[in-house]
Image 1 (cartoon, rainbow, N blue to C red):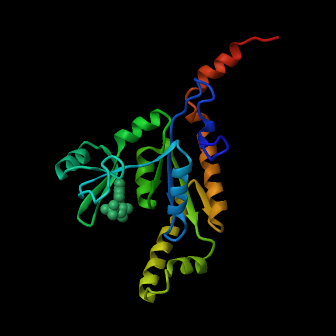
Image 2 (cartoon, protein in one colour):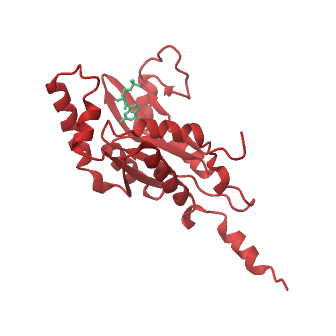
Image 3 (cartoon, helix red, strand yellow):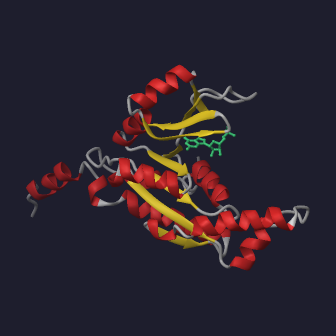
Amino acid sequence: MAPDSHDLHHTDHHHPDLHRRGLMFILSSPSGTGKTTIARRLLAEDHAIHPSVSATTRAPRPGEVDGVDYFFVSQQEFDSMAENDEFYEWAEVFGNCYGTPKAHIRAGLKHGKDFLFDIDWQGTQQLYQKDAQDVVRVFLLPPSIEELHRRLSGRGTDSAEVINARMDRARAEISHWDAYDYVVVNEDLDECYEQVKLILAAERLRRKRQTGLIPFVRGLLRTKQG
Ligand code: 5GP
């Protein structure tokens, strides 16, 4: 990778003591606000952040890889994981169960890995209730209701009824904007992406996440020079 590429590793590992705890970076928005594009860009450019991998009881689709797209588990395995409180949250969707397993995320956080969650406000709330200190909640807003309508109208082939249903869902999601730490208005996709990266960079530098600081600063204070 070229040294001037967008690798955000630079906040990490300056010094062997300066390791940090990872974070859970949540991106929520009504659909049509660019969240998926921004999430994909971040995952492609920043190798310290990883997608959260869910467990599911549904069968793998062609091309899906166990441990990458999902952890594919039997209903029995899923039920026992739920019973043993091994999920941050779980839900039944179209007859299959889906859940966010804690174990690999907990282990990753300890080693300074960050995780990206592309989830709605309900999932955000559940994650926050389980682990407030590692969670960073970012909400993206459309620049105007007209622009959102334009973005949700698709290619002009959907009925007014379908578009109105999308608008209602979007309004319902927007109404939870105040449950987030950061709000970014996506007027321009590139600018919005830059702002999301700034939030991530600043959150990585929070003192409480820089678990190696105490011995590092002690070392600084112990060294007498001049
Ligand atoms: P698919 O089977 O098409 O991959 O996903 C179906 C639905 O399950 C999507 O709406 C997706 O958002 C939802 N889903 C995937 N993983 C999880 C999860 O860990 N928790 C919850 N609550 N929903 C999930």
